Length: 86
Image 1: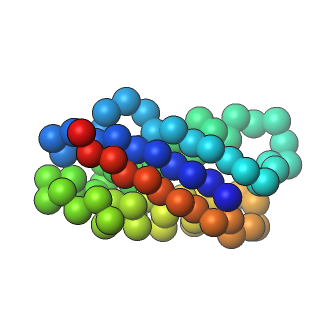
Image 2: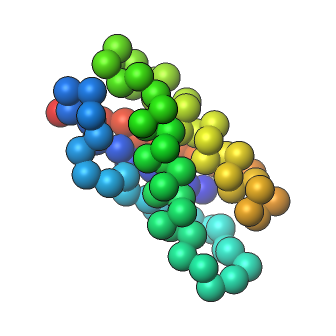
Image 3: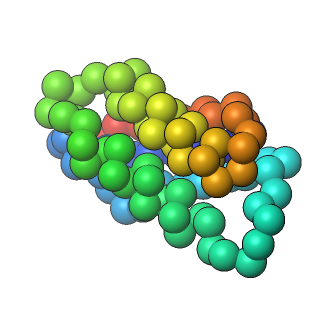
């Protein structure tokens, strides 16, 4: 399971997303957290945050991350994106 916490303000992300990983092991020593953070930030920048649709952003993050994780691990973990607006 992955829990991805993202904070947005005024249509822009605040800081970097927080990533919590429970029960997924990667086969080598690479720093996948950095890559996962990049995938999440890419989903955020591609999504139009100006409309304030937090649910749509959460679904976009989940879709991009699910594709990345399946490609890397051949697993489909539960992904729980949490989008908070301040």
